[in-house]
Image (cartoon, rainbow, N blue to C red; front, side, top):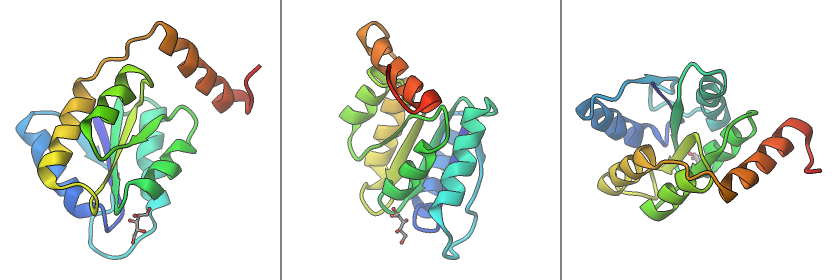
Length: 149
Ligand code: RB5
């Protein structure tokens, strides 16, 4: 199950990706926003992030105008590693090297087809572990304790 979230600016691209996930028969839960009314992206980034952090959803994809505000918000939730992507290379590395559990996309930055490619690349990417595990563990340590010993 994929957690989805967006503000009003991210909503059009979220709809494109919902259709794409439907085509791929990948299940998702949409944590809002549900209309074009102007809203505040932290509320929706955090709602989707909490669903990932508490295990209700295995990964999350979130959207705002740039992907910046909503990714920063999601990354404030303990246990979340969210990558904001506008090309597939970072999406793949974000899985292989950083074991990201959330992806952010900017609906005013990436076109629909590029966004689908980024989503596919990110969903199919596998964490490589090894030396990358040490670094991800350091991120987790900061998340838990506020420092790296
Ligand atoms: C909304 O206008 C816009 O600021 C928001 O969607 C996002 O791009 C912020 O980072």
